[in-house]
Image (cartoon, each protein chain N blue to C red):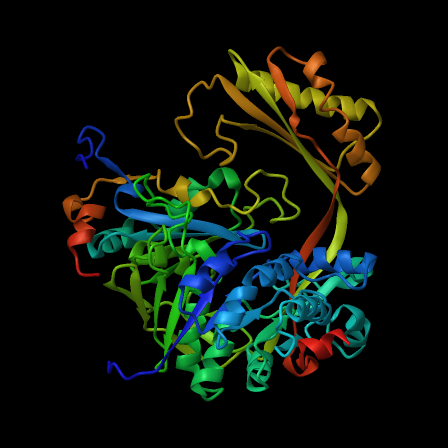
Length: 128
Length: 461
């Protein structure tokens, strides 16, 4: 994996984490799992409720809640009322929010100094 | 951990109604299972089944299951210890049991004991419960059910593992339930095998985590995983197996020589799938805390799951209620050529204008341009200028006739719209009944599971 461009000084969330999303009534949940402990620590500061709410602004979330799962190094985000009525009432092609997990992995975050310790390759060497 | 600890192997061969019909047989043949579970019920499945039953009283269960049982006949004969636990009963567990009994009887398994677990269906008793003081307020908004009562199609309380345990204790080899919490399909066999105390919250939570992990089938074993690359074949994807230990921990795995993988990456994604607060994963059996769950790869495609904590089961049971809420339809057309995304948007608007000119002002409409980023509206990046897109137009209205009129407007766009419109035969629009979801609760004491265990012969006579 190449280092991120220092000209932009950002990384893509997908370089240090993976994700899955789904529906809970009219809410969507987006779980983001860091590949490494260093990445999880970084996300505590970088992937805040505010940042996630801003990213999903086009879906007009009524609120965003973040829950920690330290055992697997993950944060679960509950996006309130973003599914246009939920599975059966929504007219959207993605009526269950299945694509939101892949979307969030495209989020740009400020480049952390210890980026090398956070990637998937680093994760494979770590005992987790 | 001593090696002497007892384990029970539970494989889940279905994650939803419509899942791969061959998966249960392949899993049971290769999985060395004690139990095969089959999970079929999503939030609104019950209302679809209720609608079926309203037309024919012998239906209302998941029709996939009898087909699966037929495919499993040789396995059931060669593995006399294998038991099946499923929520395929839907709105009619007894009807499902009768159909399965017919298949078993023809398949030389007439003595096999089949259980029907009911008691979850509150549909016919709603007024009694309202009179007794239940208001069925919406779990998220707090709004009372009120006038929507007239439009209720189905209402089902989520039962826990108790009915399954009772059925297994009565030597049922096939347990067919109605609305039971998904994870209870796994917890039931665990309680039966290990004889855990009903208040042993930590162990109950452990088996509940395992149940949650396997409930969506192939999503645990590499399907839908965001780290997937083409190096991992998925065509012969192995369905998940949970090896539960007496101490409440589990190892999740899949059958040897199947595609997919079971790693910390696939298991962690399923752990957080469709959950809210991980510290409170509520089932009728336990208030499970997933937040400290840890995963460890202990072998190829073997991940140990530990660290679940449990708190006492919630006072009230969740109820999944559905009400009839108008009609909707979606249709698709391909729009190709230069500036196709812009052309598609205009064509979609044109279609809606024509419906309005015909005298129907639709309640809600949506124009999507797939290929130009609209599956993630406003979020997707870097889609560039596509050469072709799929135009998808959708409408909702309380009047069926309005939605049917909308459906008629797709075909004319091929000749009376912008250039490059094609593919009409691909995905025709059809008016569908909308059944809206109303999650609510009911007092635990108001719901009683009912278990009937009989042989296949007895079910059919």
